[in-house]
Length: 66
Length: 66
Image (cartoon, rainbow over the protein chains, first blue to last red):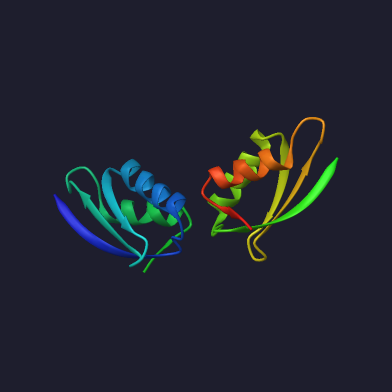
């Protein structure tokens, strides 16, 4: 399993937390979102998902991975 | 039709806009949300809905009608 912490701009409320978690899940990973620090800890199996696909899924929801 | 503009705290993003609009709709009215001014313009038929029910529906979503 790979673990990466992303800095993500634009998350403002629990709806955003859910949107990001669902996006990461759909991309094959799992996410822990911390609104206060604007970070998303993602965990994924490198044989089943890619970091790029996870980042893209977050950005598709309207957030910026910086 | 009655029209009332409410001041609502806690709405931060488009997910919040959708949550408030859906809540008001389910309470029998319609809503236009302006995030920047933190206002919700509600319109409802006084024969079918009450302002109290609409305010309660918004607060049930976690926002404060002030």
